Image 1 (cartoon, rainbow, N blue to C red):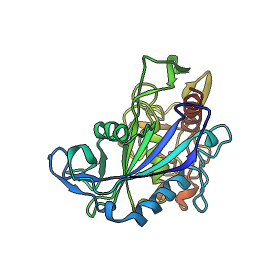
Image 2 (cartoon, rainbow, N blue to C red; image 1 turned 120 degrees about the vertical axis):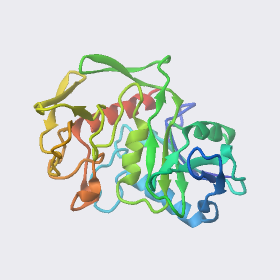
Image 3 (cartoon, rainbow, N blue to C red; image 1 turned 90 degrees about the vertical axis):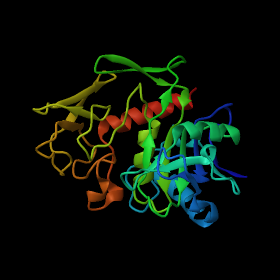
Image 4 (cartoon, one colour; image 1 turned 180 degrees about the horizontal axis):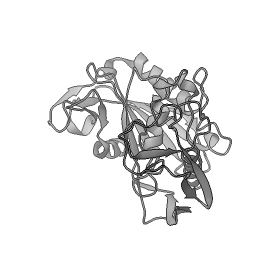
Length: 297
């Protein structure tokens, strides 16, 4: 087993906020089939190491020309523990398969139930965990939100009159399945899904006509105010950052920090320079607040 501490995080904490990047031992192919193969990443250590470097650089805004630097905040970045884990020789079994092949697309699906048990078995606790795959047939990344522990404390906030909480602890970590070929803002986009919460604010995709979430609402006509978060009103993106809302859509989004480029959670590859795309205003504020709350636990 090779466990590498990339960033120590807050060493004064017994359980600092942690991001784990794991070399995926096995693939379920396809999902729910109960058949498993060894993930090719197991014999590609250089590709895994390159992916680890890419993921960390993307989270900290270090890619060439990158504008959104989520973790590169003095009140956040130095306190985040980041580890990578590579274990060779594991059999292709259900317990070791952290990723599945979708059966209707080229998407890699994180098997979140297996993640938690696998991490614990190998002595790792993580708030968000990536499984890196070198699948020969599927390359699209995907993520699942964090399941917060709503029975334990957190930092309260209000959203459109509702009282919610940036919970200090989780019952199941946020999980990401990502390919060794992933590039641009993919690692950040998926992290933002995974770091958000099923019960206290979901950050959803904006490149489809999504259901309501923290960063997405539905209805026409589009109002001028998107939401009120902690007493502050956030405006609406009336034109979908230059991409335009399709005529059939009912969803609409929050105003951007850079109205000339797609949002990180939208189709950033349609930006003239994808790495220069940034978050909308409520997504960035929410994530900063949520990460600071977890760091302070």
